[in-house]
Amino acid sequence: METHNAAEKRSLNYQELQEYQQNRYPFLLIDQVDEVVPGRSARGYKLMTLNEWYFPVHFPGAPNMPGALQIEAMAQMLTVAITTLPGLKGRYTRALDYKVRFRKEVVPGKKFELEAEVLSWRRGICKGYGIGRIDGEIACEGELLITIPEILDSFTPKKPA
Image 1 (tube, one colour):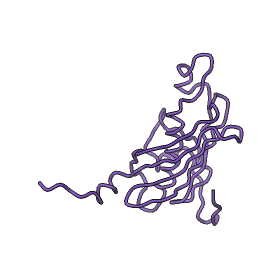
Image 2: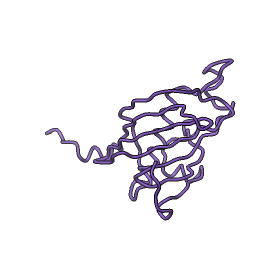
Image 3: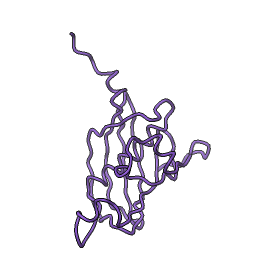
C-alpha cells in the first residue's frame, strides 16, 4: 500500500465506522479502522473471538471464519475507502464481483488484519484489492468490484416508457 500525507489520513473507531459502513452487528465485520485515506485505501482489523456467531457451526471442533465472510470483510474495508470521500458518507454499496485466494484459516483468538486499496473509482464503480492477514501472514487476498448503485444508476441509460 502507498504512503500518504498525514493530513489526509484518519482513523475511525467502531462508532465512527458505522457512519461510513451500512452493515451492523452481526454483519459488520470490522472492529476498527486504523487508517483511511479517502478514495485511496483503508486498513484496520476484526478481533476474532470464539463468541462470533459463525464459529460454532463452521466447523464444530475446528472453528474458522467462512470464506464468504472473509470476502465480505475485505469488501467492507474497500467500502470505507470510498464512502469517506466527500459527499458519499452513509451511501450503500453492493458487491459486483470478486476473485479471491484463500491461504490460511481465520480462527478464534486472532486479529484479522484487513487492508483495501482503491485501484479505480468511476461512475459509481470501484475496483479494488483486498488483503486479510493473520499473524502477519496472508490469509486471503483478491480483486474486488463494488458499486454505489445510486451513482451507477445515474449513468445507466433509461429505457423509454
